[in-house]
Length: 84
Image (cartoon, rainbow, N blue to C red; front, side):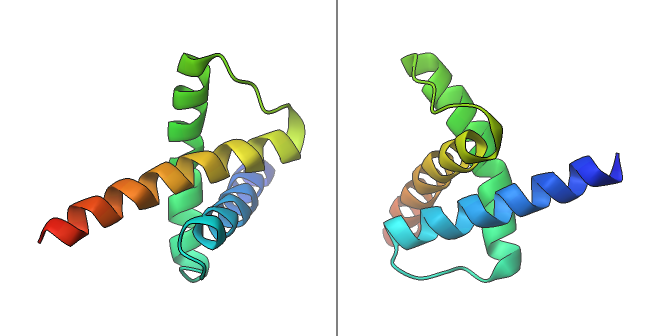
């Protein structure tokens, strides 16, 4: 159980970092990357599933899927923040 949580945190951190590099060009810090990456993983799996896209299995597939979701989250967050 503890190992699974650690793996989720690591994948979330890498996916969030990768997503923030692609979208914004800079990191969000470790905690921000973890949060965006973990939430992005859920968004990525849902969105890519709806589109019929599979980015693979294992760590690499999870990181890529999380990064796609993180980019979507960052895009939506920036659109909302700009309007204020």
